[in-house]
Amino acid sequence: MGVSVGREVLDSSIRVANDVASGDSFKQSLNRNASNSYNSLVNRAIGKLGQTGGRRPKRRTTRRVKKKKTVRKSAGRKKAAPRKKVTRVTLKKRSISKTSTRKRDIFGKWQS
Image (tube, rainbow, N blue to C red):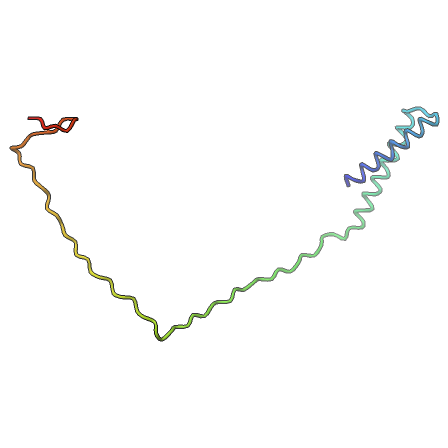
């Protein structure tokens, strides 16, 4: 639609220029050609609407089914080894004797 409007404007402006060159006034020529161009665009649009047959039928969609792979069980297949039992050893917490109240300072030296 935009292309046909542009073409019509171009043709109308050429007709106006020819009319002015032949001696008509610019204002009269512009009014006449503008109304003619408008009517022609409206008629074209109505014609286009009459030509279209509505919506295009939708294309059928087909679902693609993925084939499942068959897995063969081989006779020589080994079973996974059983997991080894892990025994956890709990460590005893060190107890700090109350007699030693020495601490380290920020430089790492012992204070008394």
